[in-house]
Image 1 (cartoon, one colour):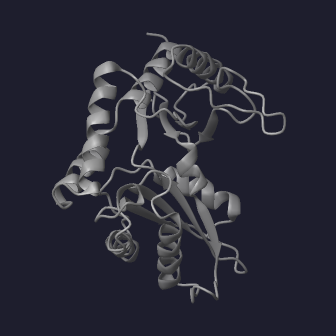
Image 2 (cartoon, helix red, strand yellow; image 1 turned 90 degrees about the vertical axis):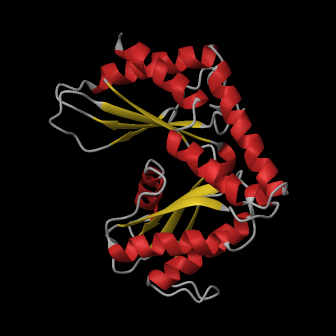
Length: 281
């Protein structure tokens, strides 16, 4: 199978099949909600939708999002050849209805019709390795969830948030409260402490690739992840903001270096439909 075909199959899979860890988290969430409540009903409908999408090989959501591609190059990697193969795979996946035509030129509003255009697909280059294969991960990120992503600059006087982990906690809970279930809750958060404004969003989006339930190896950040998940789910916002015990499926936190004058907290929000899959070329 050619690399173009492998990339096309990757796009098909990521559009139609929810990763096992995300599905398991949704099943667990449905089991703890009050029987016959709106929250449990919503989660059961989501799980039925997941079954139908995989069975019929149709998109999990009508918004197939922006195409985020994370590439870890191996030996003898050829960047331009890879991009040519990727673009051809995107064209074909769009033509077959696996990807909605979501690439719109910002100023003119013109739809390119094939999901190709300036910045689309969005390719993120990760560190090279000495492996013989190149690892490619695709994340389809819906527009509604992307709209909920945000960034704070500490100290934040109205939130009483200082430049410390408690300040980070206050920012994240403020963001969840403001979102109020928009962006198709229950959601998943990638939270980056530090960096500059651009690095923060880049790194926060990469955190969405982590398996649900995994914890940061730094004990204080692992503890913060657990605290944020528990406290966010205690707010009662629930699936789609209609009340319940499951506002978030997980929270991932990462520390980066920063300039002494800056202390950013960047939050990447993803909806329950965390569509990510990986292939080796």
